[in-house]
Length: 252
Image (cartoon, rainbow, N blue to C red; front, top):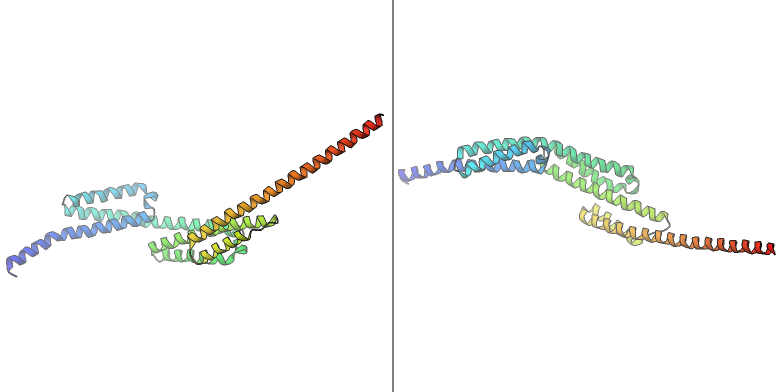
């Protein structure tokens, strides 16, 4: 390669370098923006979020205008702004998920979940502890996914306990529903296998079936009450007739 060709290639490489740096910095700013968004930084810190968005928009405008130096500096500023939001949002998000999980868990324990299905609590507890450990280790994105799953598991148990209590109520009225019992059993098996959508579908179906059975119980009670009311009314009428007959007889 002659000297002129080498210098031409070198010049082309130097001209391309700022754009490559700018693109890399821009990608990092957008990655940090997404992380802040994943942890709801826009909701926790709306003012700071708007300022960071403005910095990113200015950097992108500079890049589009070919001002690579201003673009690179702008992307660094935007990255720093989104990183600051992300660092704060992570803590708030983690605390919010922990509060939600503990609220549901406390409600489950108070309602007797340890008595009704203690084996169902263990996987959810394990998942929640796993999420907290990940947060402690700084593995924020995996921790977020783990916390979302733990919350969904406790939510599934919360719905299942409502159905279980409805089942016990119906049984206390002297009625059972084997079909609904099988549905809730299958739903909890799906939960233990990690198929939460299938579990929730089964819980909802069982809930509807138990409500139908409860309606039949109440309908039967109403029919019984109506029959009893008719019997009592008949006895009252007959008693009144006897009383009138006795009075008429006494008047003669």
